[in-house]
Image (cartoon, rainbow, N blue to C red; front, side, top):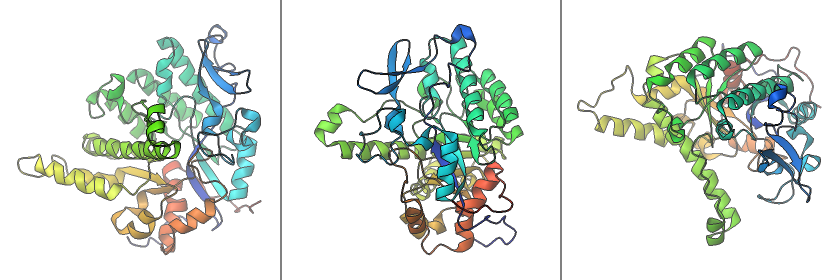
Length: 398
């Protein structure tokens, strides 16, 4: 790593960019944004007799809003708020989110979904193709409405109807015009009966993303929806042990998806296209990169790459990854990690998020890290990736 005196500067040492947070979607997401003939068919919120706010589709509850809005909740997961009244207001209200960001010194946040699943795959459960597409478009419109509270600071990542590549391309173009700054995609399309990531079927989407300068995001949990958080595993171990196992399973699944990406041939074909591994952590990166190259060489007759570079080398130019709770990777392994490719996140308001300890964890993760590297991780990398401008003049924190 070398210092770069020409790098853009952090607007203030007290401000940083948060590369992964979530919106606890308010009840009006779909009912207020679809044509009248669809209004009775879209997801909506109902409060159960015991006071639990649930998303309902076709008369069936499918999501409790409190499970992913636990910031500040005193009980461990799976404890959480029963309804919006008990959630942290910043989970669902943009004005409250901006106030919370001011308090924490967060200049900008990148926003991801909850109810539509982390890769948008829940749209696949909607009854017909027309309704799926209408709901994806309405969801993306909702994101822009929510971010209108301050578009400089609230960075939206659009969902796509990824099951139809032509419709996905059209929605990406529409979303770019609306102000979205990235694309949400599944890292495992084959899990949904679609072509593998490496298949040329997806090239129109990659070409569009590259032309528009929009990064593609693999959020953890964007692939296979089967969860290991089962009553059987809880009974065999404990809730805490099952929660930890399930989290690690998702982190390492993203490592597999990144390995798939690096060996797919996508990056040699689209050299300016950027990908982001979201909420996956970063400690696995050195092993995955080394393992990819080692085994790729073993599988080729002449042990050379079919592309200009070895698979791992594309990571340093085309892939980002986000961390939040880790300290070993950032304090002990930075020499093995491309500092230009690391983003800091809080995961607010999820069960594993940093809340009430954001700066303590940040400082622990950056202890002994050179100032120019710290600046890259907390500001420069995210600012360059999403086109986030430094505030002028830098505001005073609340």
